[in-house]
Image (cartoon, rainbow, N blue to C red):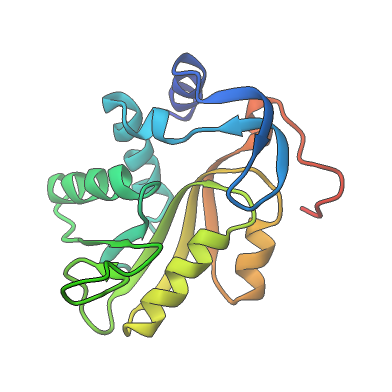
Length: 188
């Protein structure tokens, strides 16, 4: 069963929220950094994230999950494992930042089928750029993107960018759950 409060405790216990001067993947500067992998690469953290995702997505019809490699990797593995326990057959995939450069030279790895209804997962959403790239690459290979999901939304424009591209989005937590206000220059 999903325990939201315990998931937030694990972010704190694993020091996944750090303060200082950071440059984010989006190129933005920030006074804090949320490292979702410190929770999703922890056994209890991954279990809680996946339980939360199954609850969050319960009303949607989907048959595959994945996202940009590295952030999505442990979450995809957890969702596939828990899908078996829940008798929900899922296929997983990972999206590369660059094609492999040999073999099939694909951006998307995994047993996807044309017409797959997929959920794109990201550990931490800022502007949503990597999730949008993942979604667009999935559409190129014939998938339907049902939803984009973040574990933690920094509330810095990701949800708005998803909506502008026509994607439904959801998140388990937002940065406000950790007592941090989003920047004033970002409309939320």
